[in-house]
Length: 127
Image 1 (spheres, helix red, strand yellow):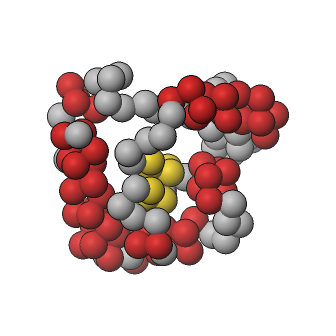
Image 2 (cartoon, rainbow, N blue to C red):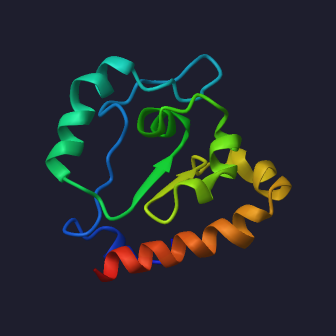
């Protein structure tokens, strides 16, 4: 995102809002389980209403993208169409070592999306 830790963790500028507000645990393979729908249904709208209109929203991972965009296509499809939502909303893949292959196959992410995201983040934090 191109920001320092101090700016990223400035609660007056940045809100990190998880989808389920609880850790759902791991499956048998050791991967995170999906966020329980009841948790997001119970709390997410209230928290988003409390925060008010956001200058910029980063939708990190498929569950956040589906909840906010109502789009049930693949994460790849939603991230590929990032320009449809920018500069106020950016659908992003979940940061994980598992995405290394995806990032190599999709150089447009680093070449086009990341610079636009960094500009949007800078603009939002400078407001």
